[in-house]
Length: 167
Length: 155
Image (cartoon, rainbow over all chains, first blue to last red; front, side):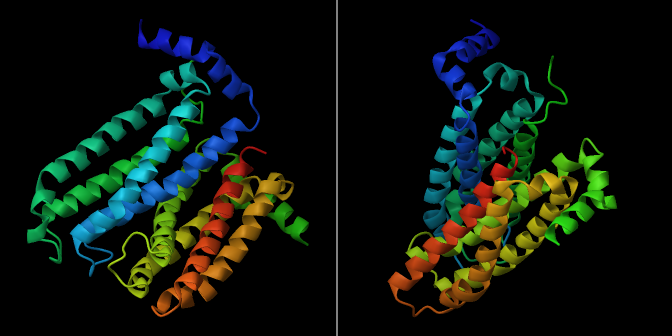
């Protein structure tokens, strides 16, 4: 089964049709997605800015991660769940949408960036916990994360516009 | 008077250039959303601290002090881009219930944030009950702004 035929099957399911035909479902889930963005990206932005040494400068990096990261995960869970439900609205259209594809590539890169950071330099955080300015690699990881998440937000918003839709 | 103002907005050079362009509205909207992420973080990190979550080892006053410039600057970006978006479809907004929900929530959220919440967060001596109540009101008011804002596009 190709991915496209999977999307076509998904679009024909009762769940997808019901979601698509409902007046309230899409706006409600979309609002959850936007409020979840405040929690998830709000926490991610603060963490990234701390890595760059521009805010919460007197709070040790390890404390920011220990206290804020759990909430970033809660936000991520809300974003993934509401995002998947939104996808049910018109699976074929989203699957062929260029902005959705760009968003997913950037999502992959953002997760990769976070993984490289956590499995690498973050292991030695005790050595630079209070160091200001923060080490260059922490700055790069934070800036890269900000750029990618910003791009994901912009691409995500653009999914709604049908400039490049196949008709 | 409000009606005349909205009519004037829509007929203004700014409103016409945005509504006459295919890309301007989405681009301004994207900037509006990027600032939303920043304001979301700046508001929530303080409200979470007031409830006793998040940066618990750091005094509330310090969290609030660090968050304040981000709150103010992202709010300015939100207000400017939001006003631009409004001018491009001012008459639609005027007759849009979600828009007015957003405007009233925004008014109360701003007043609350820069008076009561600012004072509560600056003192580390308020009782937990007062701190919690402040945080809950703040989150509810700002959520109203977000929900109303998202609703403008749907109704």
